[in-house]
Image 1: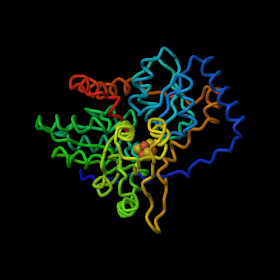
Image 2: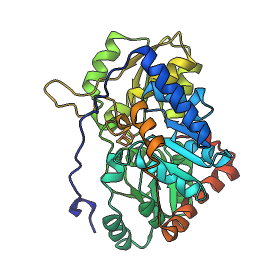
Image 3: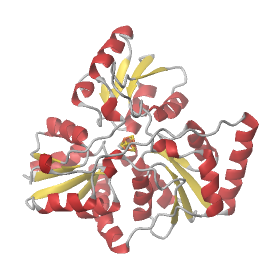
Length: 354
Ligand code: SF4
């Protein structure tokens, strides 16, 4: 089966949600109510780097965490709290549930998904894998529980390189899904034989190479930081290519004063917190005349806000449920990655994904 022949669903990218403005006292009162509800419900808040800065701040203030998706799930496992409130997109809630089956996992909006997840329906992906039984199936963490359950390995953006290298050295042919840009980046660096699923992230795909060249000329001393879900001609201009955690680290460790950042703008909260004296510049998205669907801010991540966080704590709705047979199969490739990381001495915390 040729990947080009796949008749994949068109991805509907939602408008960026507009949340009603709040005065500072209103915001503080809302945050105080949420903190109290978290405590009463033995719940902990785990937020992704791409969510709204207010949510990230609240997660930190209330004893929760702000992290990449896998670290979010691992943090949940280390907590005694019985409820995990995941602010992020749906596959993150699912990964938390896969690794913490005994806990209640709820999310502010179950409709918060991801173009990579949406663009990789489990039935079509399964048929694609079945058509290539001689390939080892490696999937990115940004996938549904069902797709993970069909895979041999789950990887994050940081650990993808050593795992694919390891498989290539063992003579394995790889079926990679769903992000074709990350897959091509890994293929270029490892030389592995890889069959690609044609998915992409609508946020990172918008970074534009020509406009980036222009902005680099205006800021010649700025370091360019790029997430590997971006197109090849954007990655080529990077001083650092890496996961969310790696890019945050680069801002605090590199000597440059200015940074041009090609990943979701939500990450600026953590970068600025780690390096308050540095100047952060958003990498350009839509070129002249183009239509910007995300403008470097994931619309699905934007579905998480203080307002619906309080609502979900009140209603107890939006719980993540995963069929137990699927969960048991999905945990195997995740655990394989964690075991590999432990054997190789690779800290997953430094190797996060979107
Ligand atoms: S930024 Fe891209 S990869 Fe991350 S959740 Fe949004 S659509 Fe998915």
